[in-house]
Image (cartoon, rainbow, N blue to C red; front, side, top):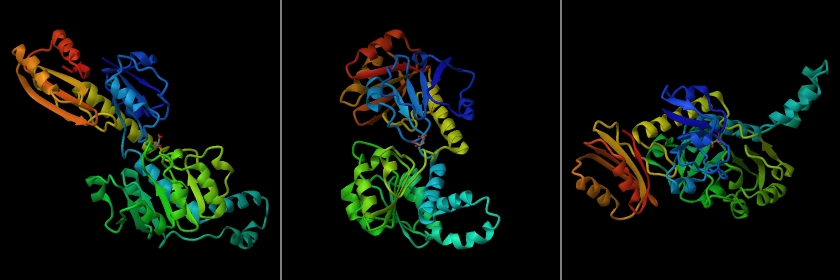
Length: 387
Ligand code: MLT
């Protein structure tokens, strides 16, 4: 029996993926798996029972990834699962920036008791006129799952689309419409585009990347869209850019008290992935990742450990080891089994940065003695017997 805890409401279709072998606990310290959306885990103690955290969503800035890795806790996210929901809101954000739909709706609301509104509106409408996105230039910063969908949709709406992504994956490159022009630098994108939308994770290296330096390079009257994270944009610099007209509109799904004092801000309350479909997709993907890891030791979509697919175990036992990525680790593991005359049927080892992960299938039942000996090896973080 596996125990899991949820730190936010998680869609039932996702919880249904967890079979009768899973039981929900209200005591997070008992849980082997945690499902989380945006609740902050930064001040949480991680219990020794905890094996994995699955973030039902893309952003993982609410999870202490390094602390988790140090304690052998694998963190997953659900890339792409909510990408369509975010893409649709980005398109809506672009349209809201071009057409004064909101101003027009407010006018209708204020004049709803006017018996002749069908006539007066024909005069009033000039106050809410706008422009079209067709033919305009859109720059997409970050061509991950969301950025690619935004780029392709904008292309279908007749925009000229440009993108920059130093880490563009093969899968995303193949999915990207051939009409999208990939630029080599952010500077080229800034000076070319009428609309700029940012779709990168919040990391130390991306924090505040849309700042004075970037705004200075943009065209006069650029529309900036941020459906990723608040601090990717330097608020003070954005305020100055909005006041000077360098940025004509700032469309953000991550408003804060300061940003809301600026002119020409169009803000929504983190609604990007808040659709039934996105919440269902994220919950199901997160639950499947937990099952793959707890039941078979396989790691899919981890953000702090290497991905690793060793399939199902058809040997007598499977042992998994999270360890430091340094020389002589695997040799020590295999020597330990050799000493006990235990045959290794399969061995998979993957590394990522400072950490590595080994899945070892053996032709003998595992014993506590083996686990203790493996755990005692310098550089081993966590040993788990899967079967
Ligand atoms: C994400 O990071 O996936 C989105 O911002 C949605 C969310 O936080 O749930």
